[in-house]
Length: 144
Image (cartoon, rainbow, N blue to C red; front, side):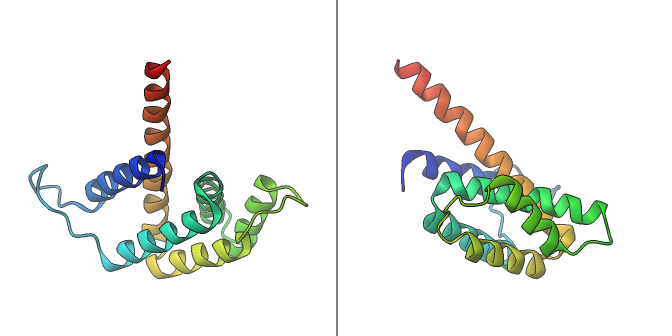
């Protein structure tokens, strides 16, 4: 695990804590994530380890795009939306290790969490990546 991955995981922990925190709780109060969110965190960590973090981020963005498309176009299945988003992101012939496996894992997470929780959870993942990438770029710029 490199520094960027550690920063991402720390940022994701912080954002998930805010997502699941009781609004009346103190800002520094410990937040216990629901079991499905804990399982999703672990499974997404496995996907990231197997595919590499850059590919994982693309897969997470695909999953969020597919989820939004699925909710907006009720006639389609999530799997069709997911496969379309993956084909748009990873062109034919691009060899991505574990891509099919990652797609199945994300589908299992969506089913476990339900549509209402899956979208906000993925948004936290994407926002955490964007924030940690920005911080990483700032650190690199400061070192030059």
